[in-house]
Image (cartoon, rainbow, N blue to C red; front, top):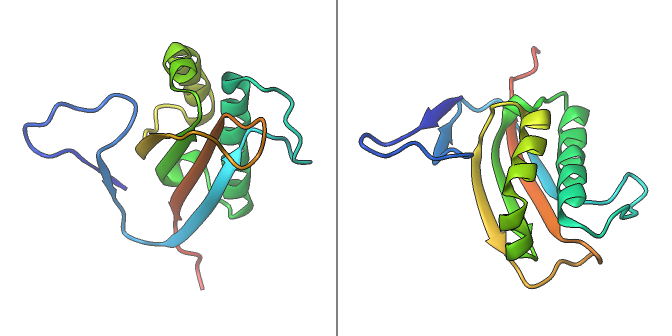
Length: 134
């Protein structure tokens, strides 16, 4: 995996502008919300839902044999921009606890609502894992 930073660009904080991979096994992870394995929200707040959604992404990835370092792209859909901006320090701490210093290409999109109530945030991801030996 090679982080792409065009010459002369300031390094981004908390994400990569682009990532190049020598394709192996590509894993597409559907949008994961902040509910538990039984599809029950344990909180209606953004921060705990973000942590659960990230854990859900990583659980799906682990099922394919992947690790956080294999994630190349994450798109986040959030319903509450003020809450997100106010919680950035907490969200960063959660990120580092689960992802370490790995920052894939990311997009944050603010939306009016999510399908599942009382969802506040949804994360989808793409990962590239090493090829399996034949």
